[in-house]
Length: 328
Image 1 (cartoon, helix red, strand yellow):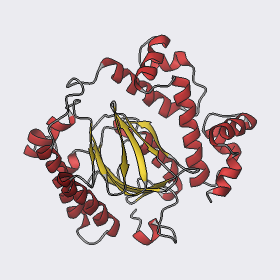
Image 2 (spheres, helix red, strand yellow):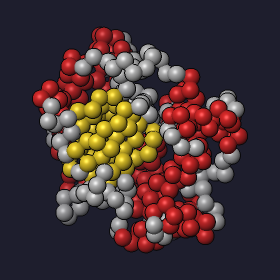
Image 3 (cartoon, one colour):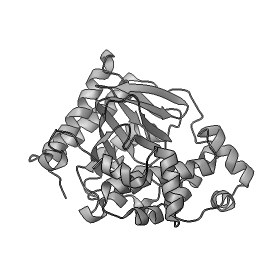
Image 4 (cartoon, helix red, strand yellow):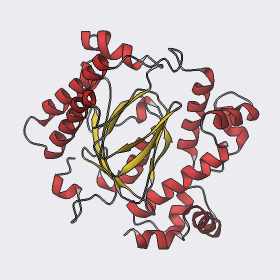
């Protein structure tokens, strides 16, 4: 289903919630699919694009203080290109962090842990593309895959590239990202060619302009792999009553090692991450569905409504009902 530009934005030209230009499911299931795509638990059968023939999803979203304030730690097998149309956002990725401002952009490689967090009080208007490498290569048997994209996605020493609008050599790459997004947004005849062409040119320019950063080994460390397995488990079972032992078992490690993985890489405990993630999903459900506060709480692992309301108030500073009213 294609969402035309006039449907993707509200009256003041901004989007109140995350909108997938190429919706991954029917509208009734959008919030669940958007959540699944955002958390990106890396299971092949769960990776849904609009069609296998066009494996690229294009999103526009607004984040701001008091509403959805960003995107928590997550990872996915797909590649990601982003352009920041307004506001400021702090980005963290594999030990690197920066604050991107209006006109900046970025690239995230495959299987890279990353997160976004709003900076300041101005809304962040974010445009990004998430796509399967086959979108630009045409498949594993092509020269584009073997010579360019496969070396890129298999190189764990090049997790990301921050792109700055004030840096001359980044202007062309950012321009390609914008052009791909605009082609998808307009949806005119032949837009698929324009999106693929501009995404391909952006990736090629990245390869030509930047040498991979020697930040890590060529392969994921065992601890990073374990963390990704545990994040997958939490993302798919966050509505359940999860113990530290169950989480550790999902990655085949001890409870102590599970705690070390989270603290050393994400700088928080497993249960702190789970609680934060539940709260952020609750925010999305409150703003993106008509579900009752009780149902939202249950969906996020809080069968006791009083506990959910108390936890949400502590996290957000207001009750779920007030949060929904303020951001309606």
